[in-house]
Image (cartoon, rainbow, N blue to C red; front, side):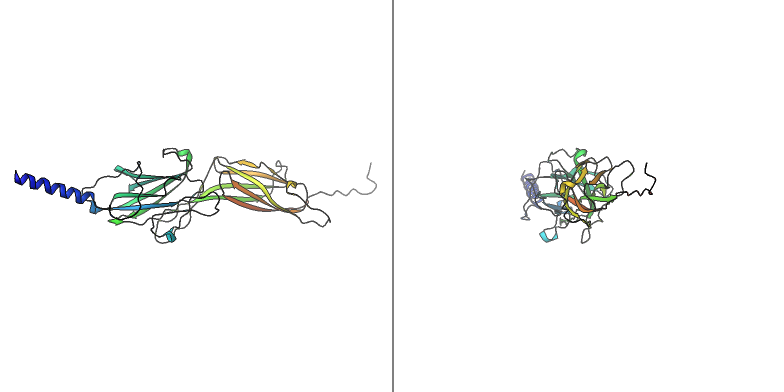
Length: 301
């Protein structure tokens, strides 16, 4: 009986030692209910990452960041400005989920940090999906903005990860109108997610991809008369944009028509992604294209 008691005592002590591993790092940790991690037989063969997020602010026109680096100066990646939820998956190097799965979620604005613990010490893929909804359902693919991932060799303890989540880019390309456009100029518009080039030694940034079915709002920002007639002062209303609210198609593309009531002029057109502070501008020079017809004397009827 004494031997059984000693054996039971040893098992309790071992259990306490195992459960205490990785819990005394002093870092602020937000464990989410969506976090699911396996329980390894040997915790010394696992590592962890701490994801820290600086959420985009609607009144700040700059790239925002996500990183697992401990120093704020190392926060380098950008994030779409309407991001509301980030879902993380840790999968094996072949793209297969662990069993049980290792995942976590960060919601705007209540969370800005999460610790993903008990990751096997092996080469894994850290994948992050950004959504424009605060719903906790990561299957809402219609709200998916961007996907980024990085291959990481997990070592025991803390591991650094950089994830470039990308940001919106509005491309504006002036073009000559077609015969049926009945305007002075057209602006071909494209919306895409582009990814910054990370510093250090993270994985290469993903390729850009189009963002479909969003709305771009257009407005005249400035206008200047460049003709020779004196006393002409054009107003912003002298530039007509059609439509001012452009719905993009399934390829993230669209076109607006621009017509000037006074010519020749230079004008700046501003495009804004609806619901965000993502903008771009396009400069146009619209010349006077009035056709002068000279009729020889004597041919008037």
